[in-house]
Length: 327
Image (cartoon, rainbow, N blue to C red; front, side, top):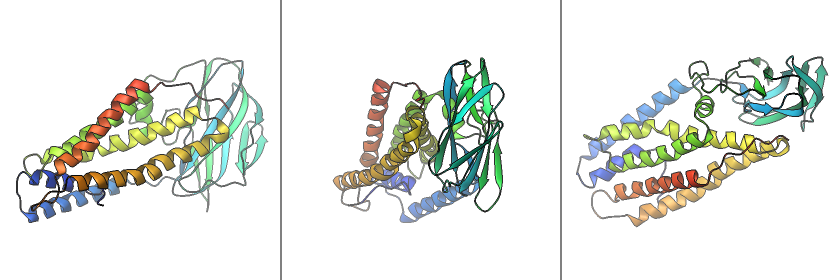
């Protein structure tokens, strides 16, 4: 079976219309080359070395009541081998929660975790228990040490910023909007700005529109449809995956949070893509035709467009945001 792959959606869309409008093979080749160049340029310009960042979402607690603050740290290109958490004034630290595989040491308001390791592109969670003395917005700055040397400090008070501290809202509310420029233009900032429900809905809607554009675009007068479809990939991918990760982070208790993140990655990037490739191959085979173009690509692309529209309906019909897990 032939499987649809994201490597060349623009080429397949061009072929789809070519079934209705014959065009030269040379034109198809040229379009493919343009697509490859665009993808490479976008990838190179978007690349930015990062060593580690906070992956926890802002936490809400009640002032004057015992609470747990969960702090997530993600490693990217370099593994993280130490984490320092600065407990801010206004938070009475009661105890440091055990982090499997790590040793903790407290010196006044500084809590240091050592002896463990967050592998590249992994994430680990650390917890402290205590109480906010009064109504306030508290920031827990972080300093992460990298394997092989080097440190990175995260102390920003901006939600979703790459260098954001762990923010805790004790009887207060986060800002209603996020400045994309100050937040580093990250996907986390965008999701925080619009909310989980809207971000998830936008992701499903963007997938439906993207596939429809590939179904009806071509390499001639309707080339603009293919370009828009390519540009929508960022919204489709980031709002889907980042929204899911944030939701899991809010729902899963601390002791299973890392496992929950690994499970959602397995379902989406592992099992989902495995099953999807077989379903895509079955659809492609179903629309095989005779002629210069061996498949009816317009009909093929309308299948995932319809599926995405159905997911959008089901999402808004059944998704109910719930409160964040505390422990």
